[in-house]
Length: 515
View 1: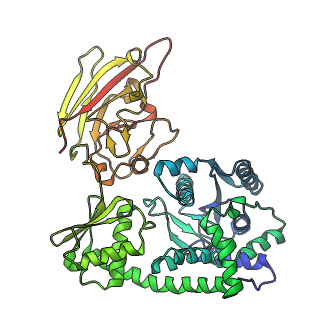
View 2: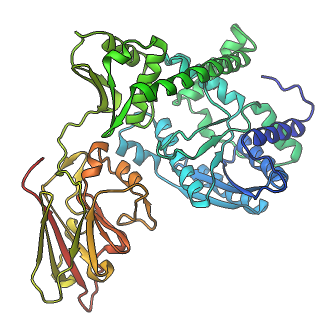
View 3: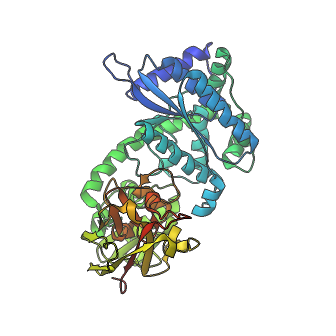
């Protein structure tokens, strides 16, 4: 889409200033400076964005933070990009978080078929972590109208429903991970083309990087941008990008209304419970098909975290299931989810191939550490038997895997019904408590320098949502010392000393069977 303005600087800065105002960054005199994280890859779009925001930061009272993630994919070029962004932030006098993470390893670990999807998840998780660390309520990214047109066309090619026609919004909920409910994704360049961002950098005399990954034909988006869109412009409609953007805006307006109706209905017909969503079939059968699909999509997203894997055929199958009593007892859905029927009730939940290995934990229990030289302490409660025994580090074989990852979980399969960990006695303080997880819990897993949300740890460890309230937590004054069956805390580990033995506590959880 061609830009009509003679000055990319004037156009881009006026558009971004207006977007900042719409997003609440008005820059009123009595407004404190507000933190805003800016994702910067080093390309022309993000370079234009960070330079523009830097020029507007005082007028809009912004405290800017630069974030850049090296995906460990393009070798030296990626390292050069990271250095470029670091130097750019330094020149602008801005704080920067520049990190490297192995997306390919993440893709293999999570069994994600698409590298693009794995990179997207990793990137948004990283940006969310940076935002949390600096107290920012939003992250600005440099998506342009060209990106919007590509996204809408991609969704059409994949057979998306009307939701896919929306493409992107200027200010939208955080896409991943789902628990970042308060964080927003801000796209101030969405009304501008790449022609404008490149022109802006050139008119200001600012450098930017070119990403060779944007030209690799293995990625579907690249083929759409480099091959399909130019073909459509040459052979069918020279203004096809504008047409796609207009379609997106029309769909967004209509979907905003439908989303409001869906939210209103949700409160009347949906019950969120035990990691799933429950409905009465008779209630859903009376809902208009357009709203019914949106309700089912919302239920899937509530359980799965998002609805990216949900296809139009999946929605059609669920709709038919709601209206039929002879379509079987469940519908299989992507990601191991199912829509189950039981009499007049429907439940959207995650399918689990194994029963939860932990008994119900609906109470807390204080534990006393055994006295020096005293006998082992044994406590029984809630079907658990907990044994605490004093030992010293000289009795421990530090080659034993159990010290570093006690009774590990493999996928969703638990290896044992008895879990044992060795913890540093001095780190535990005077007493311990066993309880289930609480909102806001944080945990520093062994091997990590910083704490993370326990909910994020559960997600990374693939703990099914309906297991999480049963996982026992061994809590000391300092915090969670052991997520039983998964990982001990870094600070609670036994420290091996070559010359002298250090005091340690052996803690064992066991129970007789499933409940």
